[in-house]
Length: 440
Ligand code: SF4
Image 1 (tube, rainbow, N blue to C red):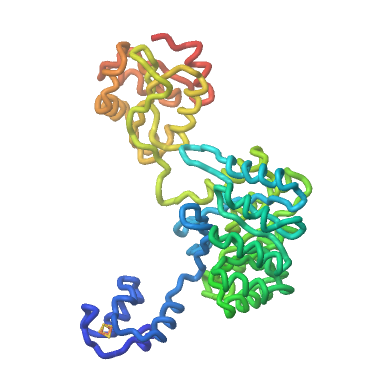
Image 2 (cartoon, rainbow, N blue to C red):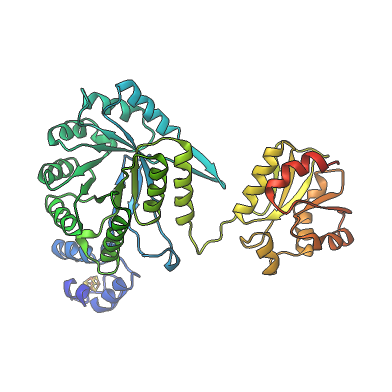
């Protein structure tokens, strides 16, 4: 009804529907876009787009080509649907570093890239402290030139922030840290340069108050920043803010969040950042660039942000690891990506070039696929035939997973693979198995 009230109510049918009421019903059901009515007044457009805006704003940091997007989440819990935009790690470049050291850390951030189960995991943002630098504009410009990831500019001084933002506005950095003491000045900078703004507040009421102030000054892209000081209390605030946005459509808290991690001990930093990455920070800002710290956090993010409705799979086909030849081992596994990549990485580690035949099991691992009737000796034989594996090698030996010894006799009886070898139960035993037991 709220949508209908704002329509022209002329029933002119130009939208292809018989009445404005029918159009309003379809907009409410998200089957039509508001723009399908060509006669909306500007006033109605503004009111309707506000009413139909998602409960959490989508915020983009960085320029085209290397943007980091966060927000527009729709659910509290992953199993309700999925989480849409993975939490990003931002690494601080302190003002206490020399210019050379700062550039070196920026290069380190560019290089903080890891591969895991077929996906690329990396540090998403470089957070440059500007207050306290002898020449902040020069430093930020040099880092912006070299950085392969979007920037966060950290500072409290509006004068310094204004000058650096003007110098690098084209790379669209996130301005951080607006707070109660500088909100008017920081909001003016963000609004005039059309940059995203992160607001730090002591509590949720102050967050709502400051975000409203920024919005009234014309800032569209806002993040709510929280202190990591008390882990439990901060997670409680992040949860309340998200619930208020998603369940009550409370606009002043309808923004993604970030948490600045403060911890003296690197182990604590890693654990705390992982906790906030899981619930519900959009960005965790930390100091360390150590791989042993970054990788566990990235793995947490990767696991939390997979879509629970979509099985994690690889294509069911024949994979060639190394440069296998006609004497190389042949083995099969399932198309669950974690299973496949575990096998693949252990085969690589063995340094024995091999063929891996991947059987379609709807994304289930070996035992689950067997229990769920998604894999059978007959299916394995058919897959080997379809992938023409026998054409690749001159031997007829097939290594099967140690968890499926029951397949051995049937495969030998019904296929060209007359010597079925029961392989290891666990992927980590593959290198020793291939190096010590494989003979073509
Ligand atoms: Fe109503 Fe607009 Fe459709 Fe005309 S085009 S019927 S005014 S909704």
